[in-house]
Length: 218
Image 1: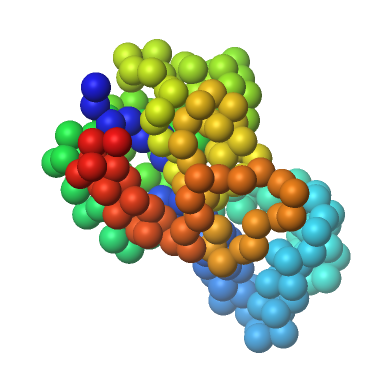
Image 2: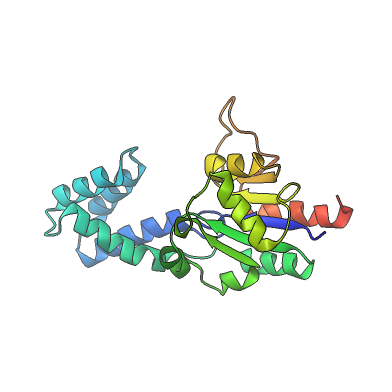
């Protein structure tokens, strides 16, 4: 049976969080907000509040003519186009493909939202693409993983899941007997929480783990 792996998209294969900062930089330049304005935007991104609160704070701070919902709409229109593929990802995906791996992409969000983020012909590496918000369920619901398995015509148990979300990617896949690699971006594992099989700082560190499985036949 072919080795099988599912990848998450946002902040796993592509730098979605970095794209938020790129939008802030663009906004600062377009509206002449200056260094202090950019600092304010970056601080807002770090606050543990809802997007509604964040966009309200931005509109109030700078006196924009747009409403918070209108500014948020402008962000959603531009943000996907500022997302960049993480360096090394296409080459490593190609290596997996050349080694005979069966590969799927499972991402929350609709296809029309996620496709613009998939630069560098990213979608061409995968046997299955699943945009969960176009389905009846989304991660971490086990059923969306089963949908991917059915479309790939393979068993999930013993396969691998690579993602940056402990809840959506790691817990969702582990519940179905998949082995998991958590892309931590330097974060510490919460005490007493979900335990992935492997922890890597960047996604490119996950590929040697996967390829070693292929080599050992395990």
